[in-house]
Length: 98
Image (tube, rainbow, N blue to C red; front, side, top):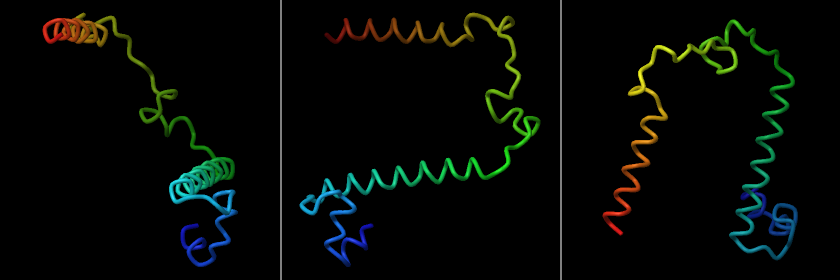
């Protein structure tokens, strides 16, 4: 798109949807067109290829992996414990450096 606009300045009305677009607006529209192209290609490739069997995805994809139970994990090794510790430290540091 950049080369197209450089070679033919009238192409700006197609890229940026306006013949009077400034550089930053032109860049935003290029990003928009690139994002749309990427999304369309991703959907088309996903629809046109055959999916992998679930056995091949085990251990790679969250939905196909068996999640172990956390009953054997101590409180010291659980994420919510460390989230609480970080939250308390955050509040204490805010009070100290207020």
